[in-house]
Amino acid sequence: MSKNMSNKPLSLTEFILKEQQAFPKAHGNFSLLMEQIEYACKIIASHVRQAGLVDILGVTGEKNTFQDEVKKIDVFSNDLLIEVLKTSGQVAMIASEELTEPIALKENAPYIVFFDPLDGSSNTDINAPIGTIFSIYHTKGGLLQKGSEQVAAGYVLYGTSTIFVYTSGKGVNGFTLDPAIGTFLLSHPDIKIPEFNNLYSVNEGESLTFNKTTQKFLHWIKQSDPTTKRPYKLRYIGAMIADVHRTLLKGGLFLYPATGKNPKGKLRLMYEANPAALILREAGGLAFSDKTPILDLMPEHVHQQVPVVLGSKGNLEVFQEF
Ligand code: P6P
Image 1 (tube, rainbow, N blue to C red):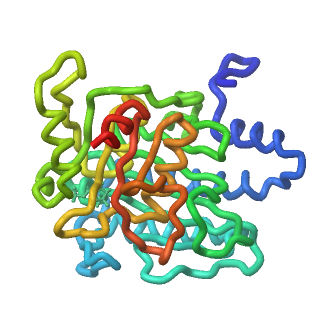
Image 2 (cartoon, rainbow, N blue to C red):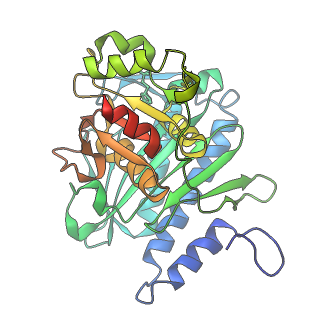
Image 3 (tube, helix red, strand yellow):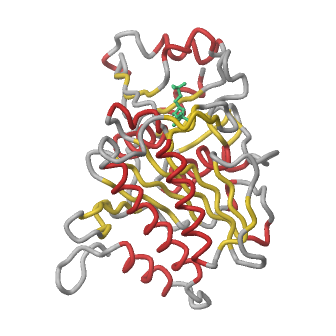
């Protein structure tokens, strides 16, 4: 489905509309919501690209729920997403990493949206990748639903190029922004994660505070053994979505275990772990929080943090043997 009559790649809009046609009862509410998310991320992309030039670098002096320094581009992205989602008229409530409490937008609107407006934003100052993450639920299920109830989930990675990756439960597709026409074009149709790769991604600096099982595994993968493709290579960008995107395309493992500093894990269930887990499932991978599939976790609160290990089935099987 990646080309059409004029041999031009499908745009994100065309793809979403084609998906809508597969749902006879769809009235376009979801398509409109996705279009607005796309619109907001295009604006964020243009500001991220100019971050060194326009007055949105540096800190605001405030702190968010996690006592992270809030950088101006965080605030800009958060406020923009709130405004654009409100305009869509499709969103009953939003929850964001940058908001202590969820905000009600439009009573009886069909969807609830969780987002991390600019994940890994400390990378902005060093020109490293950052991303916007979103997760969409039906309003009727209430604010806190299991990740398996997500209607759709995705991210926009602002890297060497800008790519929009999402799933609505029927596979994962990636769209790369063509800056010349300001349109996301289908560049990665039907993404499937490789079955195995000897790549791992973790903050090794915290590894002495990981549980013993994880420490044992991390020690084992450093031993040389060509038959089991060891030692593994370490790749860590420090923005979850960049590390997840590489894992999705190349295979291997991404881990953010419980640490001394974050005994319940650092990554947020509702707007980091769950969207990533849905994408991994749809791409043929796995995503766990300790022994539980992330999508099965019953959330306790909006900003709940959980340990995360996700990636290729083959790599998860080896990890779980430990
Ligand atoms: P550390 C970014 O702040 C973030 O929430 C994730 O995007 C990223 O994976 C993680 O924290 C990085 O944490 O402790 O390695 O700096």
